[in-house]
Image 1 (tube, helix red, strand yellow):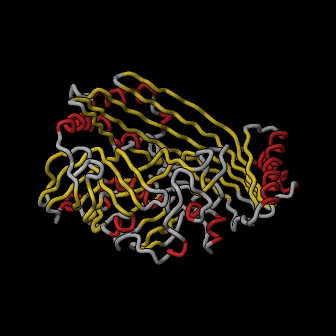
Image 2 (tube, rainbow, N blue to C red):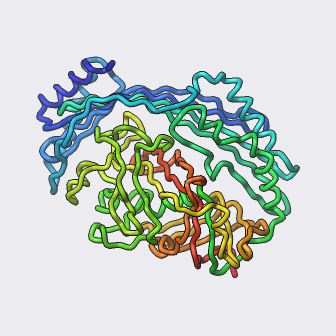
Image 3 (cartoon, rainbow, N blue to C red):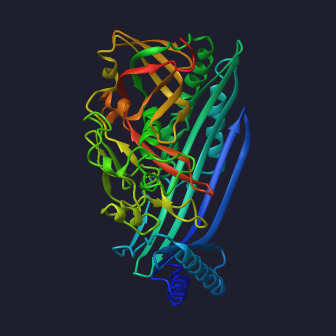
Length: 483
């Protein structure tokens, strides 16, 4: 690795300062974004960031410091600062936590990809977006068309005082488009794919899989048709949610409440605390027996896929919900030990200058055995909804309300009229217990979330919730639209 000597110096300095354990994470991160709007390139950015962060453990307290100064003096100063912060924390700490990680790894990992985005010329990238955006204007009422792509490359080099030495080269790619129609005193939008685009680990093949040009005219037409569509009804009925909406439902009503730091009260910013208290582990019937949700940070397309987290813990597969029962949490080394378990590699930092913390990674609802079209069977009068437009959930992650961009009525097992402004609401365990069918693997997509916020100062995380469309019985709909 290119940072061996730098790492050895920093870790030796931390140990000489009294640290029981220390690790250092070097990162070189490149971020590219292109966005076109109404035929004009409005964003064309390409930025690279380099630096390192050091964690030090002293007498049961952690310290963290970061710098981009790779000189010997800079490494010494940053390592000493991390130890000093840990010492200061230990002096006032009422509780001792933190321990040396149980295992060291020496390894390398690179995200598999079929086509390196660096091999795609800039004019080819721009032309794809311009073509898709132009096709969104399928109706005069489409006033704003947007199409975008993001390319992220992160090279991480992790070292620790117990001997870990891990190099990872991560590639994440995403693209999407949106049409906004205006008319008759109304504004309606359609976004594709899903509500933020398609974001996955991998190369240019992720952009190709999004199929923006092939779907642009339909998305533009749907946004215009929504202006004339009837209002989605209020009441109680059976609903089918599209895969990207199920993904957000997992993110908000399972992913955040299952973060163990949130459960333990160590974290409450932005997403509040959690109703998944530790005494409910292996006891709470969170969902029906067809609901199994797993952490799988090894999944090839998952936006959060990596071989190791930012504590140097190896990725694997573990259950959060097993056959409807609460079975686990997203954990760090410290929090896992508190409940007598092992970390499941869910610690990440946005970049080198941020302290690592528990983050949602790849959180996947396992597919069912029903073909998508058969989810509508046995529904006499219901709704099918796609693509999130709004969400609200309380600070225990229990009571929620979601709005989607579009819906279709379901009558006697068949999809009928388009409807606008659909919403639904529920209480998390009751809602997931009402799930009685999940579409099969043919409809299963690794839906990435590129902008999850957590922490203070806030960090942006990239997560994934892999999901198929699913059916839920007797759900409140039309909340916020009267009736």
